[in-house]
Image (tube, rainbow, N blue to C red; front, side):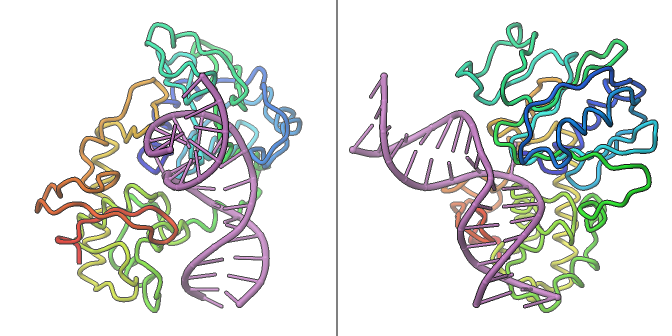
Length: 291
DNA sequence: ACCGCACCCTGAGCGC
DNA sequence: TGCGCTCAGGGTGCGG
């Protein structure tokens, strides 16, 4: 579900619920793919710790703990991280309850998809990590221990530069879209914002990366930054299941130029938006204004 | 080194 | 109502 903007919004809204709070207890589901650190060990490591910082690296959230350890959180496709203090939570399915009215959502009930419950001291209430598809990840890192999945990330997408993009694209025959999705090249871009940035730049997603000009690389980098900053300003995209930790829906989906607009007129030139699979992902573009 | 693909899961929405 | 199908904002690991 979440790309950089959604993760950043989640981070900002969780800061007051987490920072300077001590983890009194941790509740988890059983061992699964989701737990890079097994639930029992995770509990042993986290209980009693205080959260000192909450940072974002690409699409990862990294919580700094008072003993120097770190907690890595990734939302995957369907992860929802939110605090009890939040007024409402639009749950993805669960028990067929669908979308509840804000009043009914107030008391969130832990279900089988709620893999983590942080019981915190202080006033903020508990923090929940729900993920029906379990593509999300949680990992505890010991103090001073490096983490390859973090260290191999490229520069944050909010500081994308045309020069860096252009140099990464040299000699690549695969689609530029695929390069943008490669987190070791640029960290934070996902399927929606890759399509939106390429539309901004006037470059088709299927173009061989090595055939993107330097000027186009500049436009793509500019597009990535603008599109993501705008999305953060408007509260992120809410296509189906994304919700803020405070339960608000993002408004960025109203501003999308191409993503999920197949057949609808391009907002710039009026031509119908095309969709096809590129880099194994559903891709949307304007056949007229993207070359 | 690079690239495409299978795979990890569950749920929604559609046509029949 | 229900079944079977396709699709989904992510990432890893494998083989060619």
